[in-house]
Image 1 (cartoon, one colour):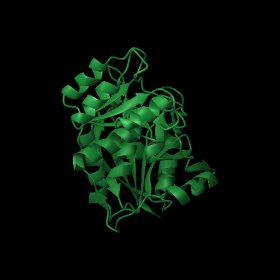
Image 2 (cartoon, helix red, strand yellow):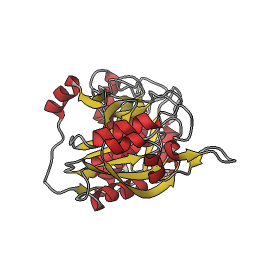
Image 3 (cartoon, rainbow, N blue to C red):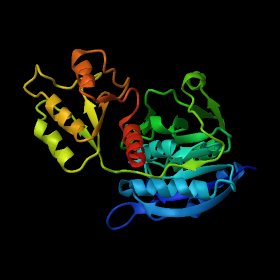
Length: 320
């Protein structure tokens, strides 16, 4: 049997009822003991890394998870990270970029209901995650509702429904059917043209993170002064959530933001654009409002999610 390490970080999956509401209280061993079917899939060890609601997970915790994989890399065939759902897409994106030359599976999972609650989705999600961890498919993935999603393509779309996560602009990796993961033909085609480059055989952890990144959602009436204030506060990177396929108000609008963008870039601030639409990303060179913004120095985020852009930018700024 494959040997898999469960890295426990807390989250809803490990929560128990308290006077102040649900909060993490179960350790990794308790998670495994409550799902006996896991012992039929693989041999499991547990590492108690932290017990946090994922709202409290910060970039320094991403580094701890990445190094936990690194420190145990030669001892295990794969890794499962139990995690709260609210920021799991950020963590999955971060680990996707932090774990270079990864030759083993790292699977994040959690649940919408605690493992202690009747009808919880936690057992099925854990079974999906550990099945994926034994399948020798290297990379960082998110396992939820019987589906596997590439780490930097996941987004949480539901606060209550079990089908909480969706793969954005990347085909679903695999679906669990009759206890086996079936990898989708669409994802196999995607990999042929989008495979991640590997710079070597040895695992490398990118752990230099600059957290001075802000996400700005444009709304009609957004003022130049707001963007300038973010820059003056010390921000080094901005993910600008723009309209449609890449719309930023320009010279033809009373809400012209181009002078503020010029100011930000003159201060060395990197601005990458994402679409407020969930699917299809930004196509900055389609309309005049996008083309003009490109000329002023913004960068197109293409098909990446906001979560992936944030994590990628923090790493790039940290290494600059």
